[in-house]
Structures are given as C-alpha cells and as structure tokens.
Length: 593
Ligand SMILES: [Cu+2]
Image: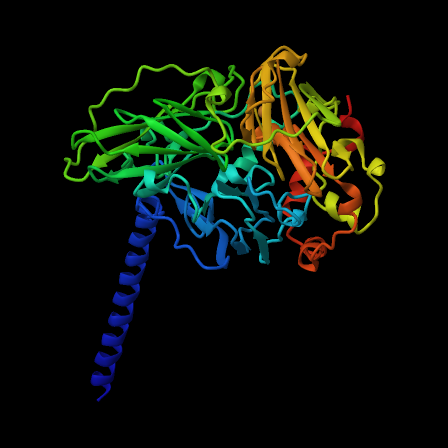
C-alpha cells in the first residue's frame, strides 16, 4: 500500500515537473517568437471605415508597457503600445469622437500627444507634459477624448516627454473621410511608418547628450525601420546580446491591377527619409491631413513629423520591387565625439513590394535616379490645395522666433528660441497655472518661452528664423498653417511670399540659416507648443509655447481628470524623472544667456 502511494506520488511529481518544464519551454519559445516575429498588423491591407449616419465615438484602449522586441533583429527592452512596435493603428471617420484610455504600465510617467489633431476647444487633450497636463503616473489610466472635427487624413500619436517616443511610444492614427474625393483612385490602403531606432536606452543617451562639455552631435541611431521592421548587422552587436542576422524585411503584398493608398509617416526622432518604390511612381493626394491636387513624384522626402498619402498602381510585371526608405545622411551631423559614432546603421532601409504570384525572393529592381534637395521638405510649390483655400491676411500679429544653439553656464549644449532655452516644468503645466491658478502671462518664468495674442479671428504670422547650421523640422500644435514662403538668410524676403495658393501643413523644414513664414487665423484658444521635431533638440530646449486667445482660454473648464494627474503625480513616490532631472537639468536661473 505504501509502495502504491509512493508510486502515485512519483507519478504526480513527474507530471508536475514535465508540465512545468513544458510550460517554461513554451514560454521561452513564445518569448522568442514575440521578440522576433510579432505581428504588428501593418502588412494587411485595409479599406476605409464604413460611413455611419451620424458621427460615433470610437473607443480604444492602449497599454504602455515595457516588452522585449527585436524590430531589426536585435533584442532590446522597448517602450511599447499594446506590446507592439509601432503601436496599434487607430482608425476613425471624419467627425467621430476618439476616446482612448491610456493605461500606463511603463514604470515611468508618460503622456500621449495626437500629432496634427487640432484639439478645437479641448487643448487639455493635446498631451504635452508641462504645458497641457502633468504626465500620467505609472500605474494610472487616463482618458483622452476629443472630436476629429473637420479633420481627416494621416496622423500619429506619440509620447511628448523625455524622448520616450524614440524608445517606441509612437503609432499611426488614420482618419478616414466618408466623402473622400479620391476614393475612386484606390482599392486598398496600407500605413507605412518610417522611424529611426536606437539600441541604447534613450534615457542613457540623453544623459550623455546633455552632459557638460559634450562636444558631439545628436546620437547616431543603430537602425532605420520601415513599419517597425529593419535589418541590423548582427556582427556589430555587443557580445552576449541576442541578435538574429538577416532579419526578414517588411513585405507589402499587392495584387496586379489594384491601386493602393500608402499612408506614409516619418515618426523619427532624428532622421529625414526619402521614400520611393522602384518602378512605381507616387501620386500624392494628401500632406499633413490636407488634400492636395494630385501630383506625381518618383522620390518623396518625408521630414520628421510629416505625413503623405500617395497612390501606387500595381501595373508592373508580377515581380518583387524594392521599397526604399533611405535615410538622408547628408543631414546627420557627426564628429568623433558624437555618441554612437561607430553605429553599424544601414542608411538604405528597404522593404519589398511583392506582387501576388511573385517568387519569395529579393527584388532586382533599380532605384529611380531622381535627386532630392538635402534634408528638406518636398518643394512646397508642388503642393496645391485640392479645393482653393482662402489665405487670411494681412497679419495683425507677427511672432518672430529665432532658433540658435549655445551652451549654458554649466557648459551643457542648449538650443535657444529668442535667446531663451525652454525648460519643462513637469509639475506645473502652463494650462493649469494660467486657467486655474490665474498666473498672469507676464509672471511665467522666462524659460517657459511664452508668446501670446488675444484678438479672436486675427491673422498671425509666425516668422521662424533658423540662425544656425542645423536643419529643423518645425511642428506646431493646434494649427495647420499656410507656409507662405521660405528662403535663405535671416531676413524675410517678402517678395518670395505666396499669398495666392500656399499649402497648409503642420510640419515644415527650415534649412540651415534660413527663414520661413507660417500664417493662420487665431480661432483656437489653447496652449500650443511650437518646436523642432528633432527630439534631441526638444530636450535641448528648442520649444516655445503659444498661448492663443488668453481671454477666452481663461474661461475654459479643465476636466478634473486632467488636473488630478498633477495631484497623483505629487503623491507618486516613483517619480523617477525628478531624480533623473537632477542629473543634468535644470538650474532655471543659470541657463539664461
Ligand atoms: Cu531641430
């Protein structure tokens, strides 16, 4: 009897051990599969959302968390949206409400900005730490709830604090148009994102970038990714790292005879991309959420923050064709002190356009010979509004912003706007200080870089002067602005302004030592940041805040869920940022030049 019991116990033990080892093995495989071959859903074509009789609310939940992924074959811990890179594509129709619950399980405070969304009447949803809200503390959920209004087109959403989006917190937002004038031009759609990718932790790279006496430029990325997929040269990976050589490239499948709308987004922190598909010209129909008259190019420069919709026709022989997202290395400044100067990055990022019926093989197609201007936006004169738009004017308010570089008193490299480097105040967002605490605009510290105008409906010109050697993609929140003109030098040449048919954008590149004039109407009360979208330059302070229509804004009622964030943040004991800030930031008084 005792023996039977023993045998029985042994069987149970063996069973438990085997189940356990199987489950560990299984988890291990799952983990591997997750790291290398996660399906981010980008390679399945889609059609526009069905129109609804009335606008609806689209509910989404996104969880921010850290996971191991290997977008380019190199396994690293990344900041993910729903465990993916890039994060979940969100869809809505024009006029719909977007209701997104952001569950922050990142281990750090975070925030989500809706790049290109105007946030009319909902400036507190803009998602900028220190300006429109406090960050969402770790372990807390927060709801962004806003109308898409009259907007449609291609957008994205990303963290707007501490360089976090370069670590993975970035994803597309597609707003379909039930009245799309180009609907008969395409059968199916894809989203194609382009991004840079660092193997080091962004927080570590930031410490190095912002160290006193640092003599280099912005850190060189390790890879470029097309829709979250790249191929790293694993022989350059540090010993003991996990890296899969010849990581499979992004493959977009097309069917002969069909036409595809490709929604292109450059979600990078540093790099400028030139996009093309061999043998397939790109018919542009949208830029930054604005329809354009169709214009066809072979190569399309896409600056950081910019978006385009292009149509390609699958009218070539059934084959494989290279899709090229070439990083323009002419604008990556470097010297021997530059962080990651020995990067094994391959600037020629590629994917494959594969016709149904083609062999599973690498393409042999040839690149278009066309040249593009180094590091600049597409020639603005090529873009014409699809429907003629009235240009407001003349300007009754001009805000001149001059961007320069320098060092502060600790010899930390800084970027300045009108000689003042922006320092984020994580704990006291501008919106709450102004609306709830009634702090007068002239009482804000100089390092908040605040500009304002108060006449409803007036025409505002932002005259942006780039008085330095670098090239800056300038992005403004809360507005789409007419790009009236741009030119070299630091004096605006008014004869070069187009007041007839300029194209509206929300992100435009300023060449080194040059000017640009952006025009819009003041009809959106709020706190709107205008900044360079090179994320390293943001951290260095190339940021200004526009307080639009303060009289109207002062009557706004900020939802309690927003003001609660600051309270929760103060309670949160795990505010790692404040610890980190002390490492290289921020002696507010000393950084004036
Ligand atoms: Cu910049």
